[in-house]
Length: 115
Length: 112
Image 1 (spheres, rainbow over the protein chains, first blue to last red):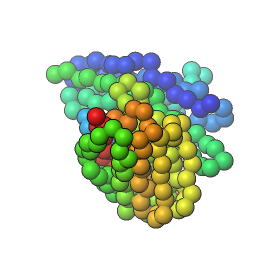
Image 2 (image 1 turned 90 degrees about the vertical axis):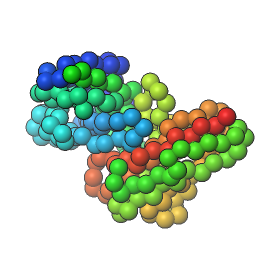
Image 3 (image 1 turned 45 degrees about the vertical axis):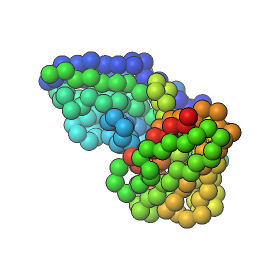
């Protein structure tokens, strides 16, 4: 089954420091991977995706993610964290069936950026 | 959240009552999805629909029902058979040829 895992429930980082939110995947075939962010009591916002091509993917709000096939990872990164980046982050992988496509999500990682 | 609306934002029901959550999109997307979110469990897929008048069960479809009579609408009914209906429900849509899904603002359902 196609799945992703987020090994950290919470990540704490000081404002201005680089941040990394980890995601590993388990898929058969080529992985289609996504990152979303959720602010309290809101829907999810799409940040970026990896389909094919460059291993470093750039997305919204200064975020980027590095696809690493040998380590089966797709970590989310940002060079300099902002307090406003504090939110819940989800990694997801596309799953395909005879009926179409859906996403399997990780359990989420809560990011806290302190001033 | 733009382009996908869910109403109401908060919904309260008594145990044993069916309740229908609304999801509308004006993005002309073909595919629509319903997810349930519980603390610490991420998002779990309830139902999805790739085209009008067709839908498939997701991982946790028991106790839920959907319809897709119009391209822009995908209502979810939480029936009395759903044992733990209190949760945050998220609707999403995806355009043909696109990979990412776009989410509505969610409906928080509380059943007492």
